[in-house]
Length: 221
Image (cartoon, rainbow, N blue to C red; front, side):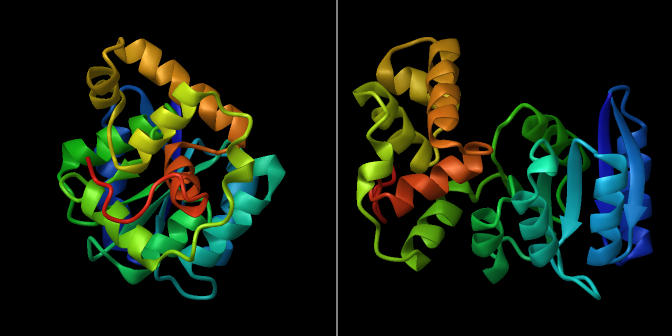
């Protein structure tokens, strides 16, 4: 059973998400929080698999709460999905850097919300449908000058190639077609790359691809 924590200062939003998620046979809402401080307390208490975290909340915003969760080794298995009103919210980029596994707009379709929860548990990055590559491009344009790629020395040539394709927004299936391998092989390469680089999930792998200089703005395939 996938356990979810809802963190949003709007009770109506929480109620809607709770009704939808609790109706799924493999998902349960383990708890709720109305501000960032409460979200942190509940995460430490309940250890949910996924936190749906609003970016803007009182006492402690979602961005700061996400950073604290990411920095706590005891919570390394907790995945955070940021909730925002706008697809390209300025804080989304910093949220991904801070350890979020992705983001969703609040008016996303119900089936997409359910798919999102399942996806992040599997280790996939979640970026709202239709804006994945645009988001990555925007992130890249805002990122700092790439550092030396010394951190990638442990990767094989194929793993670097796969990481670059992840960096431009390709799914495992798209990577498999590009490299003429099976989707399972592509997934294995992605997983090994994340392990070697200590990336929590696919979203952080995208960040590392840009910050290392392996991928540059405009390299969308």
